[in-house]
Length: 173
View 1 (cartoon, rainbow, N blue to C red):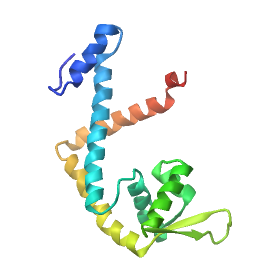
View 2: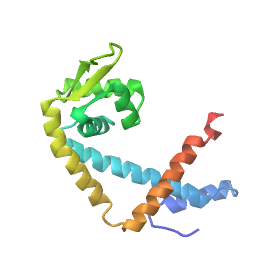
View 3: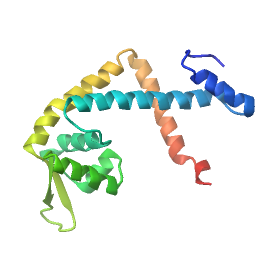
View 4: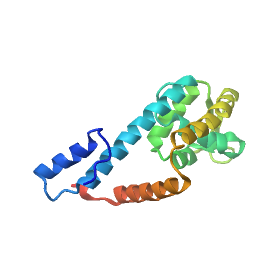
């Protein structure tokens, strides 16, 4: 197996082979690197959010972004959950949090009493007008060392990993 760096992840994966000779050390290293990249990305993202005065609550940006890009900056809670890829319980928690901060408001649906719209407030819209482009700049910055081809390949590979993880039934017992 080719060693990628002195960060210990290669050695960690090789230790698996000492105990489980059948293990795929390259796959274990990949899994570890994806996890390490995710944690580093999250930490950098949290620093960006903090610079905008947003407290650490995972998922808030996804809700703000969904509302910002929506026509009239308004969506139903169900639409937000689908867009942000979070559960209905978590959507409720996130919207409560945004509402407490004065960034979003719940409004009755005009034709269905069972549904509620969520809309950005003026403060929420002003925040998004600064935060959304800052996020695009941030994403560009952390991806700047990759070529367009590398980004394309990495996107395809990560999509395969996501699909395989969703389809996996080994963790079910």
